[in-house]
Image (cartoon, rainbow, N blue to C red; front, side):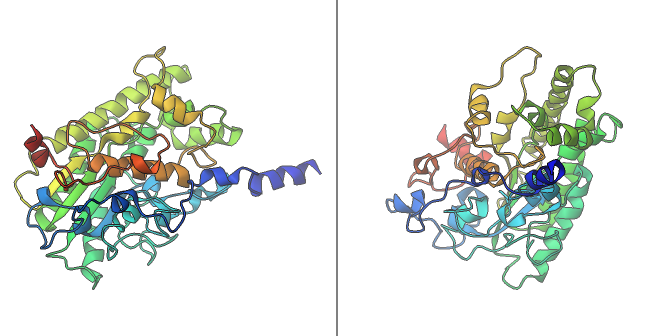
Length: 386
């Protein structure tokens, strides 16, 4: 009997299973920016030639590159076995099932401004499935896989009759490096160093720069994986899974030492990303930009062993609504919605003044284009504010 009860507890959802989903809005409710539009044009009368004058409604094609987080692994699962399920339709950068009322994703937000948006995932499946569309992320991907994903993104676009490759504006989000930092860099520091991370991203971005017209690239700094062991009241399953998923965290005498050392390496990776984006390497084309959207830095661990956690993060971790999947290494749908909200807001905040915020949100917390600043912010048009 005890065995049966254990199996049932493992397989069946908990009574508070609903907490893994975002709070849903009535279908009759307008997206906040649409409701309070005040005459702002969401889409340009004529397709803009400059990426620095790109409105949300100008985006025709959306795509995503990354690893299992971008695949949406385990996002709506109730037990750890769900880690193998690629739930791409709710991916924060590439998913588009439903609407923002029940599934907040970057594509579902942008669909409010351009209902004809294409490229978002429409369900579960592998990267080559029909459901994946232009979410070409691959579970367990490393940063040296990004170039292959870029080529797949371009190849898929060439087969899609809905896409005008030359004239459509494209939005691509890249979120990668977690498997390098967690499982490889402590065994081969040369191949998986911050410099190597930068070089692999550079190869991918160079290829995009040379081959894809009219492209806005979001580069999201890699997540600090130590957050997985800083979550309060974790389960035994989480404790076991962490050792397999992030072996580099457990190569120190104590967990505190592991956290401090790994988060220091994470920061070096993040700085390498920033150096690449601000190098000027991708500033030579008027129809191309790469922008850092830094909200993920909120999850960085303290740099010293006895420092306290960020107050905003502590509030998020203890609010009674978990944002992690059952094995504590991926985001559930609620967590992905928080990331989507944060990413959208970063895109509408000027470079140098972007917020690090992922806490629960109300409708009025969504940033909206204004008559004065109707465009996604770039390094170039942000300078016009000063």
